[in-house]
Amino acid sequence: MTSNDIPPAPRAGFRHVEPAAEVDFEAFEAVVRSRRSIRIFRDEPVPEATMQRCLDLALLAPNSSNLQTWEFFWARTPEIRHQLNEACLSQPAVETAAELVFIVARPDKWNESRRRILNHLERQERVPDSYRNYYQKIVPVFYSQGFGSWFGWCKRLGLAIRGLFKPTPREPVHHHEMKTWSVKSASLAAQNLMLALRASGFDSCPLEGFDSRRVKKILGLPHRAVVVMAVAAGKRDPERVYGPRLRFDRELFIREI
Image 1 (cartoon, rainbow, N blue to C red):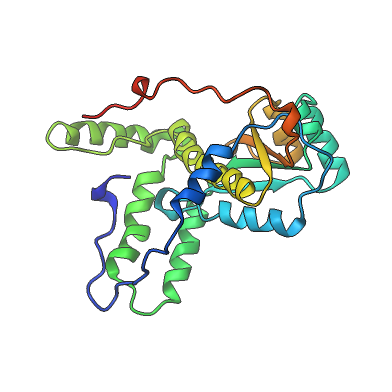
Image 2 (cartoon, rainbow, N blue to C red):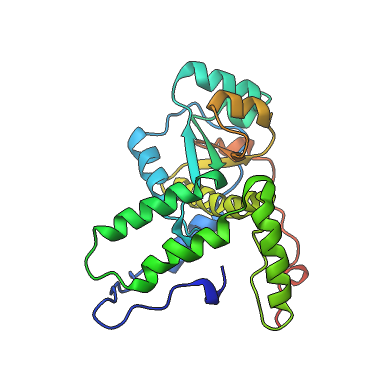
């Protein structure tokens, strides 16, 4: 979403004031630097309260237009966990993990979330018209694609013409671009979850090696849902970490322009 798509800041009297909390950068750096993708966990449980708290923090991740098009499937029953373990190819990271969470993008739920936001705004006092207008008018134009993406193709043409004259947002204009759009937000939530686990003294492993069709069937997901990743969680076995972290030189990736 570009700056042109963000509703204007509310006038004085409507502004929400929320000072930034004081944080410890050194503690945060320790969390980030100590996070590793752990492939073998100890036989030690993650307290339920810890998992609940980490999942709550995952839900605080930034996401496009605050539409929150994500779902988190926490495998808690032995039968479901067994099925998911098999769908994940019985990898050690899954078999030895105390907990398993699947992060799912739901681009098909943007309109449901939009209506939920509008209902929330109706219960608030002194909401700027620009906010309501954004969710009532702008969001449907941005994210509606139509059957067979017919409306998306129309938008593609219109945006291409507009882009000849001024900077113009070009996506999403197809159902597959809606998937990409939603996966971005879900991935940010997954990172929140993994960092929260590390901060609480536990570890994780993000996994893509699974049979997505089987996973979707087990979870009862529709066609347009996207299984972004599984996050295995538990207590690391420090003697079975797969070697020191490897990162290439920062000069290969960071461009100062």
